Image (cartoon, rainbow, N blue to C red; front, side, top):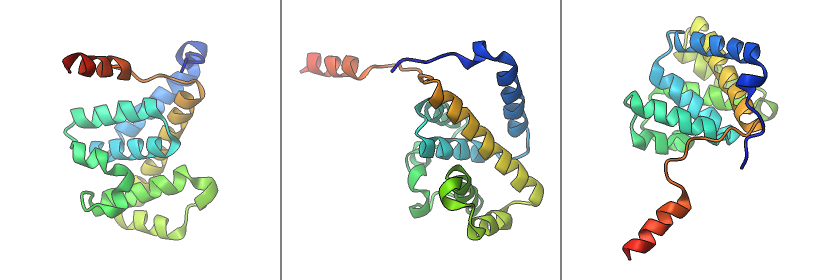
Amino acid sequence: MKARMNPFKAAPEAIDAMVKLESYTRQSGLEYSLIELVKTRASQINGCAFCIHMHTADARKAGETEERLYLLSAWRESPLYSERERAALAWTESLTRIADTQAPDEDYEWARSQFSEEELVKLTLLIGAINIWNRFAIGFRNIHPVTKTPSATRAKKEEAV
């Protein structure tokens, strides 16, 4: 895969606006762990390898467990997530898949039971922001950092045998 363009260079003012939005979402008062779970889950749904790589790394640095990151795509079947996290993840899925879901009342009510109106606005902004970042990363083919290529890992295993 080859990157198509660098949007940071092509339209720095636009990216600056996104960076300001990102800064706001980080300072919104929502729990950092919740922010990273939401960003990772939306990125999983959108298939954004660049953002999945970034947000799982950020979550790990902040103390998130491997187990919760591995099971995030199956959060409905796992007891590892709090009721507040589960409501946020349901809202994330509804809004990320808005064309299919139309943000059902049950997801809204669940989110509303766990978040104040102000928090729900901030959570919705966070979900919208990560969806925009996903579109930048996917649309322009941003490539996540690679520490080991599959062929290099395979070659080392073959050498050891």
